[in-house]
Image 1: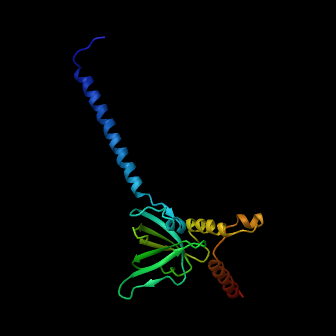
Image 2: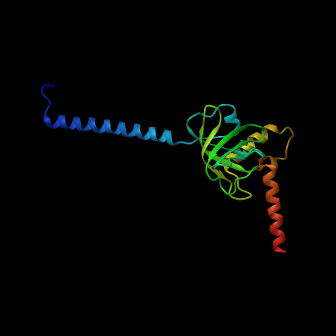
Image 3: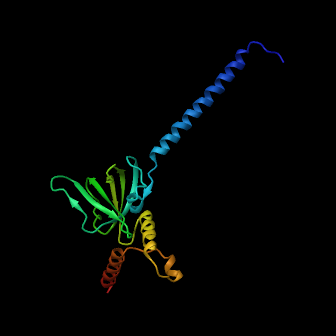
Length: 185
């Protein structure tokens, strides 16, 4: 094997390969960092109340707006309300802006924002359900888990596998169905 000075052609090839590998590594690192920062994980009221949600990071949080908890400012668009689940876990939400038309107490919401050090969720966006029967999947799952934890009796297999909605939602959908059937008469 002969060792000696490297030929210019081989040296240029090695430099090009080294440069391509370095640039690819930098691009992958930047892409993974951007992806990690843009992920908004969903947390239910029980997780937020237990302190499992990260603070000062954008997350999604949801649940049912607690009856009697909505407080609107008289001077600006600031709204403060509580979101909870059927198991009794609650957290306070602070939002500045115009709430959706369908926002009201007893309804499911999902908010995007940050949990501050004081445990208050500072929302940047609040979404409300869009009709009587729809509930965001994350909220439905969280409520189902909370409701299942409170149940003690056995249920028939058909009912155990069926999704359960809060009583307020069931009453509204029954009332809407009744109004619709009366309109058809």
